[in-house]
Image (cartoon, rainbow over all chains, first blue to last red; front, top):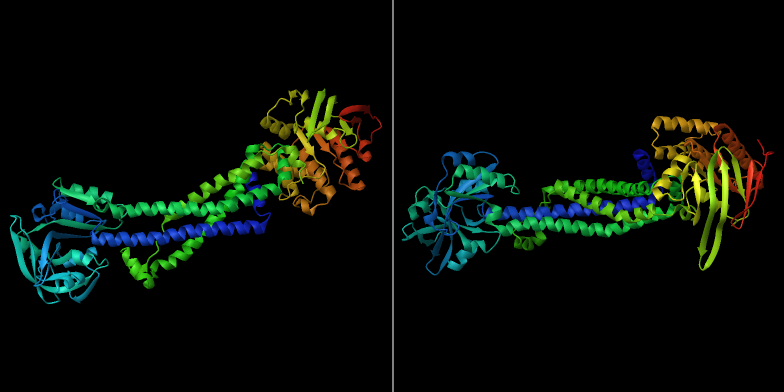
Length: 407
Length: 232
C-alpha cells in the first residue's frame, strides 16, 4: 500500500498548485535563510577563531608542565628534537614554531612598560601566521639571531620612542638575576587589537636565549594543523612523542573563551533555525488544515472503503513530508548557489572598525558547512512532521458518516 | 443462508434538544445473493439502516450479524477491515478520488487489501471491461460523465469481491437512461457474481429491479414484499 499512499499524497499535494507553490517558496526561503545566515555566522566565527589562534598562537601548544603556573624562564623546555621533532614534521601539522616567551620590562629614556617578550624565529612564525599583520615602520626581524626589537605602535607612543632609537629590555635569567640589554627598535607593528600593541614585543629567539642564558631552551612550541575544530587526535599524537615531562594542550583548553565561541555559534544556529521554522510552521499547518478541510468527504469515503485511520494519518503526513523535502531541496540548493560565489570574501570595509572589535578583518568569508545543511534539514523535517501531526490527526479521527455528508 | 441479519435495531439522533428516531426496533434478515431495495421517504431510516449494516454507524441497541460475524460490537479498526474485505459501497454522489484515474480508483480498495500490482491491474481492467468502460480506464473522474463515474464506483465496489454491496441512492444524480443502465448492471452483477445487493432508494425506476422491497416509515419496517416479477 506504500506506493499507493505515496502516489495519492503526491497528487493531492498538487491539487491546489498555487497554494502549494506559495508554501513551497516559504519553506525554501526559510531553509535558504537558515543555511545562509549560518554560513555568515560560521565565516565570522571562523575568522575570530583563526585570528585568536594566530594570537595564541597555534591549535596545540607544548610546554614544560610547570610553565602555565609560572611562565618564567625557569620553566623552559629544550627545543624539539628526536621523536617530537619527527611528529611535528608529519601531517596534520602544517607549521610549528618554538619560542621563548617571558615577562619583561622595556624602558626608553622617558618611560617604561611591562610586557610579554617573545623570542621568535621569524620564518617559523610566518609559517604559523603569528607575526604582526602590519609593520607600519621599519621591518620585522630578519632571523632568530636578529638583535633588534619590534614594538607595537601604541607602546612606542607610550615610551615616546621611535624607529631606530634604543630601548632597554629587562627580564630574569634562571638564577633570578636581572638580564638586560640595550636594543634598537628595528620595526613598529600594528595589531588587529590595539591592546596587543602594548602587550607584546618581538626579539630574535637566539638573541633572547643568549640574553637569558638559556641556550637551546624555549618556553613553548606552538603547532598549527589543518582542522582547528578537531585538535584532540593531534594532541594525543604529540603527547606520545613529547613524553611525560611535557604538557600538550589543545587551544580549547588554552583559551576556553575562544572555544566557547564555537559552542555559542552552534547554539545560535540551532535557535535561529528553530525560530525561522516556528514562523514557517503556522503556514504549513494552515496549508495542511485547508487541504484536509477541502477533502473531508474524500477522507470519509476512504474510511468507508476500509482505510484505517493510521493510513489516513500517514497519507497527510506524507503530503507534508513531500512539501518539506521539496522546500529543503530548493532552499539548500539556493543556499549553496548563493554562498559558493561569496566564499572568496565579502568586502565590509565600511564597517571594518566594528569588525576589528571582534578580532576580524574587513573581509567576511562565509563558510558553508554540510552540518548546517543537515541541521536545517533535521530541524525542518522534525518540527515540520511534528506540526503536521495536528491536521493529520484530525483527518484520521473524522467520523466517516459526517465526513461523507459534509459539503 | 443469511448474508446479513439485523435484530431489533434502535438508533436515535439528537438535533439540539430534539430527538429523532432513526431506527425503531428494526429486524431484517437478508439472504445471500438477494437483491433488496430499502424504500421510503426522506427520514424514514433507510440510509441509517444501510449505514448500520455497513459498519459505518453503530445502532444504540440490537445486533447485526454479517455472515457469521457480529459487527455491532467491533472496534473502529475491525470495522474498517470488515468494510474493506466484505462490503462494497456505492454512494449517491459517485464519490471517486479525483486525483486518481478510473482504473486507479478501482484498484484503490484492492491496494488497501494488499493485492499485488499485476493482479490488481488485471482485475481492474477486467471489471472495467465488464461494466462497459474499457478504453476509459486512464481518465480522471472529471473527464467522465455522471453515469460513467457511477459505473466506476460500482466497479470499485465489486473489484474487491465483497459478500455484500450497499448502495445509497445510486441513481439519484443520474438521468433515466444512465439509471436504467446502472440498474441493469446491478442485476447482471447480482446474477453473475452472486453478490448480495442492498439499495436504499426512493426512485421508483429502481424498485422494479429489486426482488425484495422493504419499505420503511419513521424508522420502522412498514412492509416487506417479495417481487417475483422483478426485471431480470
